[in-house]
Length: 294
Image (cartoon, rainbow, N blue to C red; front, side, top):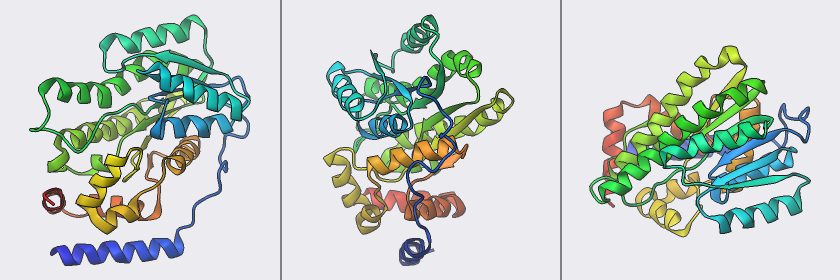
């Protein structure tokens, strides 16, 4: 299949989804029954998609536990959320790439008998540089943060989630997890692991009444370099696929509460996600490889 044919698919998909796929209004989900005593823990909740997820939860009356490395960004997020919504926000400053962090966070929650209804594993690391252009320590950090933290927090907080069932787990993957991407080799590999982990975990926890969802967004411009990299490598299609962090957060929470397994925000990204998974993997990798060399 030629590049022109693939581009024609993209353009057709964009037109069709713009015409027929309308977004649902905010808050139209099964969360209406929740009371203000419910807590959600958002790992990586101080900015970007994590903050957007936290804000969507606050709108629904969830009290919040926000976790991130930097106290300054956590404080800013807390002030904004508590001033806009009638919720209580707890802050925990941890480096989630460290082995001991998940155990200490779970210990903190258990000591206070937190009524935890939702765990959101949002923390992650990626960028324009990846395997072959990053030092070994940074690559290990990416693995530990992108998949290690989600695995560890899920396991250590599982007793609380089970105690407060029905409950929810939201893991943040990426459309990059649907196929290998040479220019983002390790990042796409870690996000693929998050997707596979979420699929299997959903069935493992089904009898415990804990629903598992995985968010797989396309481009989300949380920082200027992300926008620049997307424009250079994916061009017009990439820019049209972009969804704001606020919209991603709202859709992620709404669909998680509706017990959807795979969440891809945006009409065009949904089609692209389908196309990436439907086309032969070797072809998709070749296309990604050519785009990455721009």
